[in-house]
Length: 227
Image (cartoon, rainbow, N blue to C red; front, side, top):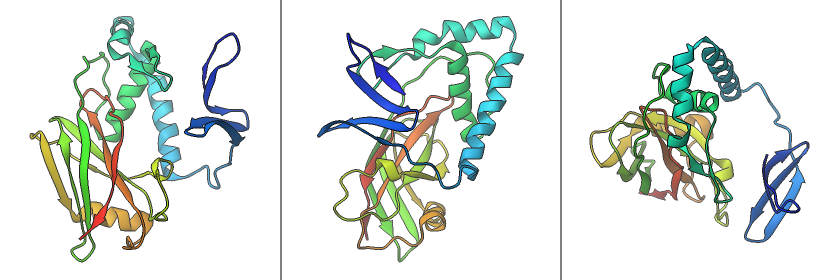
């Protein structure tokens, strides 16, 4: 739950108790939180496993190693949804960066790394069902891995697909500033999760980047076209 305090609460975003607070073009809203049908999915189990692993890992660090994470807190400051600059604690920074590195198969860092620039802009996505391929073109930076996210086929009237995005695959880093991913593996991963993509729906596909330091970019998606 993210709250911004004024003389009275002025903004809220996230979950509190059995309710979810959000805001959009129509203003602020609150609704009852829905309960997941299956809280023991593979992805949820993986998240819990990573949390346990890195909580224990933090305890096992030496004092000098922990000091490096405390010293790095200000280097990883970010702007939250309310436009305020915030920083993670050293412990949370350790858990966050190493959790992202774990997703792309990298080992655990004991010493805090220096942040680097992330570039993740998806420009076009084409689905080529006749060839069993998905093509993604965009602007990226080297030494980043790209997590491919997508939605199932949504109704044509859907304006935003962020709430339906799911991970369908991971592409390795590139040495180039512009990358075209044309792969049957991503198409097959999509079919495995959502079924064969129909041509009469709206599908959002995009990426977010994770670099070698464990930094995670924002998600960039576009509406896929068919060829």
